[in-house]
Length: 299
Image (cartoon, rainbow, N blue to C red; front, side):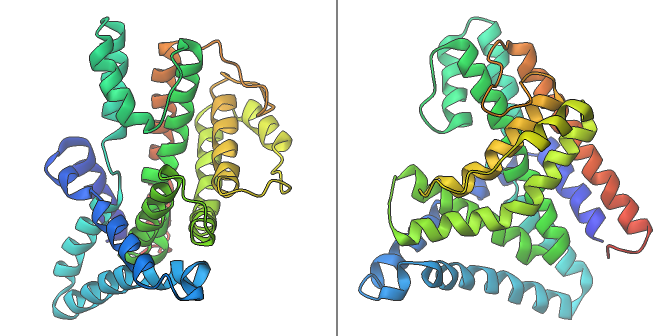
């Protein structure tokens, strides 16, 4: 049933739009801010304990609903799993937005293209076109892991609980970083996101290597070194992100094997090639899931 759930969720992601409006996690970020403010006088809230205790109720609620529905009939828990997985993917249709941006940019509609670009990068972006395209390709490689493949990984491992855990941890981390909050709570949220993303990000990088130039990607992998000396709120997330972009660009033969020497001589065809690499990686993952199901390793 896990494979069928994943396939249905991917089909909904491709051909349906109704559920994208339900993916807004601002309600969860407001809940986090409310809980943090409510217990701000307590020392435990400003750190890992606070992060775990704040995120746990939402995860427990999802697990409880799944167990109750499964107790009635497996069909109900199956439908619930599809809904949770569909919610956890996203929040937006990232690939569609990138395609629309490239199309409008090539048509000369700069205003429309910038509207989509603001949604894609979700932060300040360069007006230098080669650098902008580099940032866009890097965003595709990173968000393919964060918004889709990592969610699928945790869904396979822990079911709906795993999918919603990763989605909410990622939302909490991104919200704190976007608001430039520097606290022990923010550092703990970054560490949680880094830990949850560590295994799936490396599996995503491996799928990039398999789907592209394995030789170039393997060279980058050998040269990639995680700098343990930097201690700031962005460090944890950057370790996974840098590895994904280095290996992804190398698999596309668009970047040097050294992550600090990325090639910025890119064009919009490079963006389309990056999208194709991401799609091939998704196919690799689904194929592996299918093999695991046939082998009886996945229920």
